Image (cartoon, rainbow, N blue to C red; front, side, top):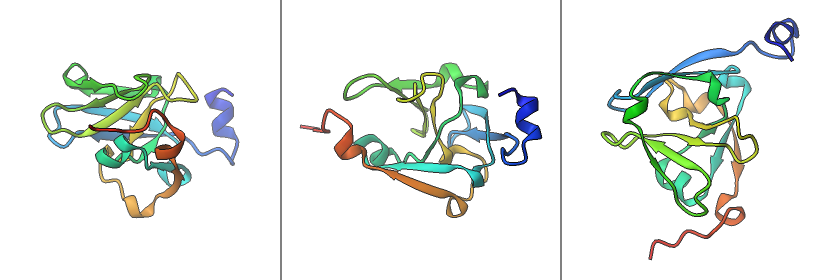
Length: 140
């Protein structure tokens, strides 16, 4: 559906640009998403989401625009090494994961990085990644 057709449909909310950054602001970016209050934010109990505090939404990669610091980000692979986890090496903030498992054009974006986000006003869905994703986490 084209953006013009999308905006004419009263049931489909107009996308919004959200400003986001890591804690130290070495990495700043914007993401275009439907209004956060209309989305279901993914809370996953897999090992990395639990340890890093990910609460994810899923913008298209083309709807993420870096204002600074994209080259500063570091990546981390674990488990099946299919999805790179991007973080700030200065402050340690967990930012993005890509590509998304179900949509190679999308990335998981941690809503905790969005400026002035009100986490208590968001709707959450829960995914049992601890038991549904593999291989099992074993730090030994």
